[in-house]
Amino acid sequence: MRLLVLGGTHHVGRAVVETALARGDDVTTLTRGASGPSASGALALHADRTDPGMLRAALGAASWDAVIDTWSGAPAVVGDAATLLKDRAGHYGYVSSRSVYRWPTPPGADESAPVVDGDPADTGSEDYAAAKRGGELAAVEAFGNRALLARAGLILGPYEIVGRMPWWLGRIDRGGEVLAPGPPERPLQLIDCRDLAGWMLSAAGRGLGGTFNTVSQPGHATMASLLEAAIRVTGSGARLIWVSPEVIEAAGIEAWTELPIWLPPTGEAAGMHAGDVTAAYAAGLTCRPVEETIAATWQWIQAEGYPPARPGRPGPGLDPEKERQVLGSLPA
Ligand SMILES: NC(=O)c1ccc[n+]([C@@H]2O[C@H](COP(=O)([O-])OP(=O)(O)OC[C@H]3O[C@@H](n4cnc5c(N)ncnc54)[C@H](OP(=O)(O)O)[C@@H]3O)[C@@H](O)[C@H]2O)c1
Image 1 (cartoon, rainbow, N blue to C red):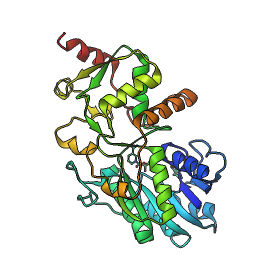
Image 2: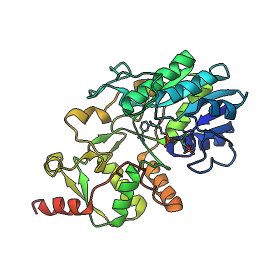
Image 3: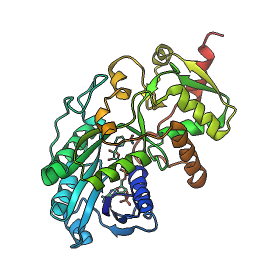
């Protein structure tokens, strides 16, 4: 397959490029070149795609069997690329997000759940959910049923610059008593970037369009299986101290950001690890065991170091002093 990846140096994009090269695809990437080089073996084009003229010049007159777009900002940027490519590419895979659903998303919600409003022509990107929905609409406007909207849930795996699993691995590697947000059997829904990449490439090869929640079945991992795998993979002597959602809430600890990945099992966020993924599984999605995801993330950190904090965004994770206070307040 002749594949164009818009992006390609971080998490999902890098997994798409590496997976495609391993399959024998002919891969072109388009980035500014600011985040480092593309994988060797890909043809690297450079342009700031927020400038449609620069994008047009960089892409020249080439054509591709498929495009995979990792953009998460202003929808008009997706629209410009998709419009430029609609007669020159057979398929447009857009890495979307389950964030497009109206909040709160009820447990069991499938692709027919109500979505937020989005404007495909929007040139701003303040609201993430609206930007992703606008990006979806822009892709469909140009490619129709040749557009694939992969509404990913929580994406983990190597090159995760968001830093959620890297934070947990670093915390567990530091050892000692670790605040583990309970209950231990809390089901999680996640996808390894390499499984997302493989499925999107397979869909592109089959010409599969449409909208899919692209994440594991709920309970593919649990909080306990995730953290215990992190202990095994790092070889840490850390001891997990399970703390109830009520104690976490009373301590004013933010789910998801201070305790990355974790969400309380009840309340508004309950549906976030409980989406319906029947359609993606029926269309061939497979998810590797979480231990493989965590091992590969650890290997990447060992090879390339922890990802730097993203400019202007607080890094995920819990302040050690806050953790110590909560653990110290627990009944003996
Ligand atoms: N993390 C999650 O749990 C999660 C969940 C659901 C969905 N998602 C979605 O997954 C996607 C993640 O994509 P990703 O992992 O590949 O990472 P990313 O950090 O969004 O990658 C951005 C890529 O685009 C390039 N880029 C940035 N600005 C550019 C510009 N102005 N012109 C041209 N290229 C530009 C970057 O390279 P240069 O810097 O070199 O230009 C980089 O290769 C996003 O769409 C996100 O919404 C994530």
